[in-house]
Image (cartoon, rainbow, N blue to C red; front, side, top):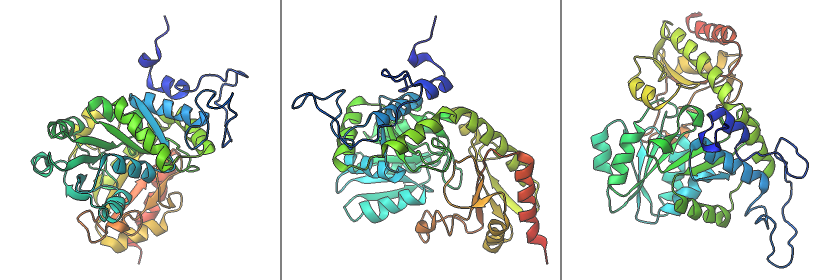
Length: 390
């Protein structure tokens, strides 16, 4: 007997959820609906509910249904970028006078959005180490805190927070727990099943997977909140175009097999870096000595393709390694099939400089791709070897 859609495995859902063969032609890939408007069968007679592509597009609908299925939520919503998704969420649930409890090493773009866009609007934030549960409890104020913002694993320090415990703390105060699941992807971690209320993704990263599309997503557990967010998605208008939606759908189909290879390569590199004399610390949740290894092992099915390491030679050494890498491309972003290297202090997290969320200057971040592992290690070997050259 065939298993029902809700009982099917992750890879089956990634390939089929929201993506039934086209009823008109039998095409197995969802059509790309490059249209702005739709013919109505009489005034107000909408076919399938479509009238204008900001409000709804069949290609985006397919993506949203797939996202909801992968995260096991009630509603999935797609946006023009991860920050557009975050902005829509926060301006939907927050009002002037409200507070956001923000993980102490959140993504620099999230920090910039909250500190320079929302704070002047009257929404305050309080950075907290999410591993310090007593500090989280103290920070959450039932009268004003509307969101506990959790990124796990974090960018770029790879800290892992206990989603289930944070959900208990947030819900006891009547607060939403929002989890940025970009680094893990829904293949490795599904926060809604652990008690989170909202999941955020930059679909630019692992969901798209090929460094050729920018997008974002929200997936929620509660259908009523989903309806409210869908209203604001349309009213605020930061939706992705149909081709962007189609590209993310294409990427999702291979998410599972890609994440397996990303994780295998990252684990090998983390172990290799541990033995290198120029490296002071390796930040990867899959290492037994990682401060949150047990939490990661409990709530994730793998440890992902992101890792960071700190150089004994300080910022100068970090910059030199970034500049000498060849197969690892010096570039921002992450989650594509190709390997990337970057210096967060001066690149992705420059907006956090001088704030409580500032990252160490001796830190290098790797997005480990799916190339042959021996080639990746060879490139890192020559880049790190430059530190001993005279």
